[in-house]
Length: 166
Image 1 (cartoon, rainbow, N blue to C red):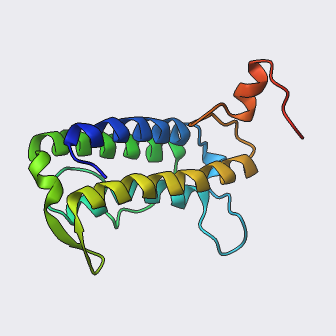
Image 2: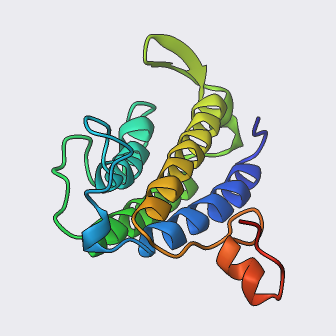
């Protein structure tokens, strides 16, 4: 749990930078990739990450300009990547300008439960990580190269001279 805005921003910066790097690897052909028929597409999941930043944080009174929860899925991977870049930048600016450490303990109704702002921020980070993991699986299915987030990817490990298991 976060006790200061600096604690949150340090973690958010690492995680959002990682998400941006992953989203930047998408290409237009990969956006329709699905695990199976009827499941969410790679493009949908990437856009869901973008939209969730504003959707969750607007519920706790943070005001910033970012794609809204009902914004249509863009047609291109570069538009999704730019949407995340814009939402992330606006969010970080807003939270620095509008919140102090004291706001972390304030509570709001989030999806029928009372959550502190610190809890909401924690869930936002974990939500992003969860969906980023889904993205990486779909990206592998789409044949895209991957980067490591918490350690080297298979491609990075091989470039270091490591043996890649089959």
